[in-house]
Length: 335
Figure 1 (cartoon, helix red, strand yellow):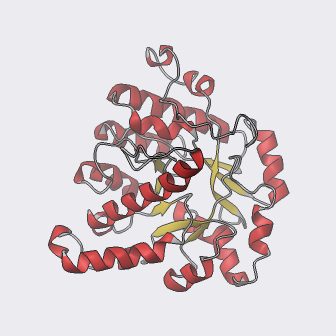
Figure 2 (cartoon, rainbow, N blue to C red; figure 1 turned 135 degrees about the horizontal axis):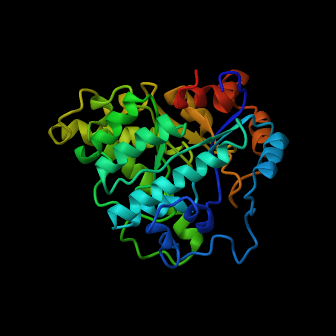
């Protein structure tokens, strides 16, 4: 990991019910129907979009095509576990998922899995953080906040963050396409997908900052994934302006929200062709930007994602090196 040059900080697996069910204990594995709530949208446009890649050899071949040495694997459907109201089932699903992704990663040292924990049941989540990191060797814990009853900054979740910080493992905010919660005006997948992921992420960023998480856990590394980085300067300005007039409502903060966002342990995944990337680098530095392929999802750029970054003339070669690998080592603690 230390010597890897190109690290995909956010790739995906297609986690099918049949895969996870085989790793879930009784009686949860006998649940009828789908293991998780299903999205009402047809993301594949009736099979026209996306790649149905489920085997490791094909993934490794495609990583070679791109020049990616290490890929960090996130769930696809598994993010919906936050919508489950059943605490025991959520915990069982997360254990099953984590065992399964760990088994996938055993097929190649070039693959590193990301775990899920049941935010519905904080004691169980803390225990699973420990097991996932120390026993299974997973690289961090991801969460998609849609469906949660509390925001990510609430003290209820602090034991999870405390354990992550103790184990030197990151919290990875990776929202799904739903959201904000309760929104019913979407009439196309295009509309929902444009809005859902980034708006949920902005909510999570504000929740973590205003909740005082970076003050309480100053060594906890946090990443915000899969909605670009162009929002970061705007959101820093927006939160700073609001905080300056209502500091009493964020009593744990000792500095502006923007200062926590740029101190070096919050990271942001950029899109390869994102036009605002040079401006973002100018505002927050080039040591916080992550490369993410989104492979094998339908909206990725395989097999041109790495070459697109290499071909940019508006980013220095030094910044490209940090973008493509060095920053991911910092996030995942592989330095």
